[in-house]
Structures are given as structure tokens and as C-alpha cells.
Length: 196
Image (cartoon, rainbow, N blue to C red; front, top):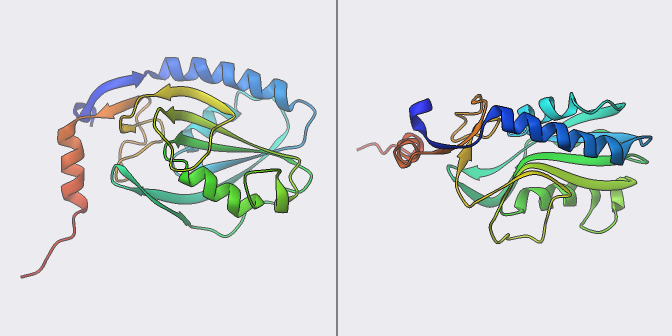
């Protein structure tokens, strides 16, 4: 598996050090507030676990399972694998995701949970913010940005620390870039087979 990594962008120690800083910022911003954190599965589960253990505040945690990638590309369609989350009324909501790329996922989730970009709207939340591990430096298909960002990255396909390629590599303790050979091998693995 390590042979599939062309380069490491962020080693585990760098990630954890940055999460210490991010957790301090979140603790300061949400102290004394009723906070619900919603993690987007499956990509953010490692990020969520490591970040929230560093936030010494009472908070509620929920998860929302969605998908929008096929291989290395976002499809532009966000597939919700469940219908709802906890009651968000009169709570401050922080949405955790692994990566901000096209913006489709965060936009669709906000629409689904709270009815739009402006004030929290239909969900009755007091505030609605987003926090991502990675923000890709690309032009977004949707006008979306994150309120909290651990790292900015160039336009490369990354894996590790919860991020996957065809459901592999999530367990790597760092964020790295796949080799072209690994990407091609993964593409062949998911191509449909044709019967004669």
C-alpha cells in the first residue's frame, strides 16, 4: 500500500499539531454554546475522532452518510444514504467534512438540513458552520467555503487519514498523493466487465 503513494503532503505529526490549533479555535468560539457536530461519513471519521477528542466542551455528535465521488472525480450528484440527523433547533451546528473540492457535497447537505446558504433557516439552528480537514485550491462548482480549514492543498487527488480511493487507503495515518499506476489500477478494478 505504501508503494502506491507518490508523496506525503502531511505527516501524522503535522496533522495532529494542526488539529491542536484548530481545536483551540473551536473551543474558544463555541464555549458556553449548545453545539452539535455532524460528521460526514465515511471520509471524516478519522478527522472527527482526532479533532473532537481535543475539544473539551460538552457537545452532541451525529453522522450523515453521503457520497459524491466515483473514482477520482466528483460526480456532481450527492447521494444521501440516510434521511435525517438529530434535532438541530436552538443549537449551534458544526459540519465536519474531509475535503472541500467542488462544493457540491457541502452545498447539498446545507440545503438538505437547513434549506439554503443564508441563515440556518428550516432546521432552526442558531448558527451553521463548516470545518474541513482539506480545502482544495480549485474553482468550485458551488459558491461554498469552509469556516474552519486545517490545510489548503493543490489540485491533486489525495488519500489517507480517512480519505479513500475506491474505499481503500482510509487507514493511512497521513495525507498523501497516489501514484499514476495506483490510480490506473483502481480504474481498471471498477470498470464493468462485459460478457461475450
